[in-house]
Image (tube, rainbow, N blue to C red; front, top):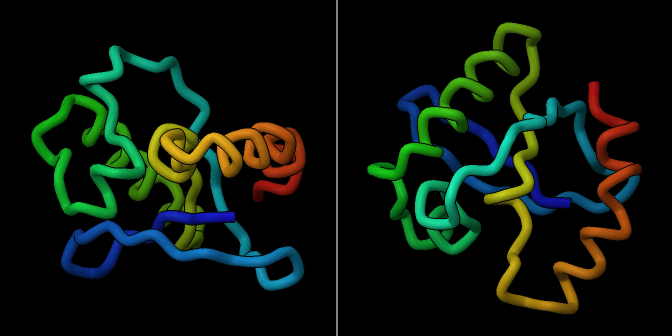
Length: 103
């Protein structure tokens, strides 16, 4: 599972965690905008997308998670690599568990 984290300087980063090592996290459940408006996995890994409307949702989620003492959070549009069909399929099969296990 990939989780997002926001540094003290406001920079976002992705980290990969495996089953028993997954820390407490929040999940953003949201309505998707247009594909061009959402920040994607590629945007985060290439340090782009800050000018997209969806970036504000990510910052809001980071603030909300921090307000509950959580450093990590998950957002489907940018934590799942949709370009890799095998990983996308694997993630889709795990989404229910990820929602259930969120703090």
